[in-house]
Length: 306
Image 1 (cartoon, one colour):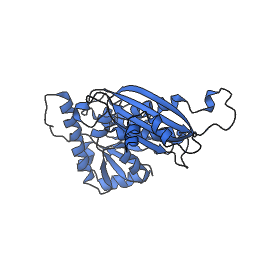
Image 2 (image 1 turned 30 degrees about the vertical axis):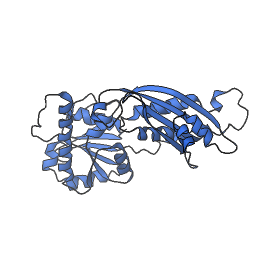
Image 3 (image 1 turned 90 degrees about the horizontal axis):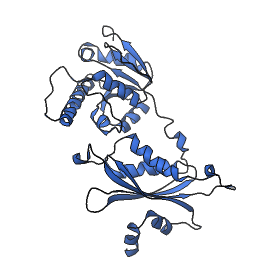
Image 4 (image 1 turned 180 degrees about the vertical axis):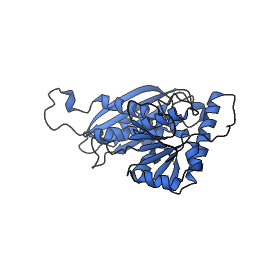
């Protein structure tokens, strides 16, 4: 037990050495890499950054052949720092555990990586460092890192204004949209009623986002095929499994590292940001002036014949 405690507070390199196979594998390491980032599940951790420290060790399979002093024949230190930067930029996270899992997974998609030891610590949450440490081993069937996002679907994002939600034959509309045989994500704005008003801007933003989510549930109540979804993970699952999703925006908007400049009341601009964020195949807008986009096609549909 005393040995285990000793290892727990050493650099992950000590744990890697203690767990080494025979013969031991080569290891590369990153020590005391500090990044300023917004992360955390507590409300006090939102809207502010804190120092997060990374210590990582990767066991690698040696290159089969002469190295010839060629950096392209090794697993570079940059692979570790780029994995950290990529996961921090992808979305705002609540848990260090989630971040550690994602960093380890991305590193282990590298062909030479065999096992990853990842320790992440918050340096500003108390008198000491608060952190997690994980050990993950490469699965035999993992693809190369370039293939991680290869099978991500590209949905058709559809904006339905309140007039369509109230007056249209929603089941018939969904029947027609499903004939496109593309993943569908439906979006709405807030209902045509005044939302409660708060004095502070962050509080009002949450209220306005929740007003959109209330309207999403109104739409979902019109057809059993509609499922209200608030996370990217569940959206990805729904798209791959033929489920029609209705976007509840709060989590994705508030957790986005590079969030929308549009306020919740700027409905079309917010939904355009979401469609671009989801790498949508196209955005279909019913009965509104079409926003412009440099990255996705935007199509207008008539309200009279939805």
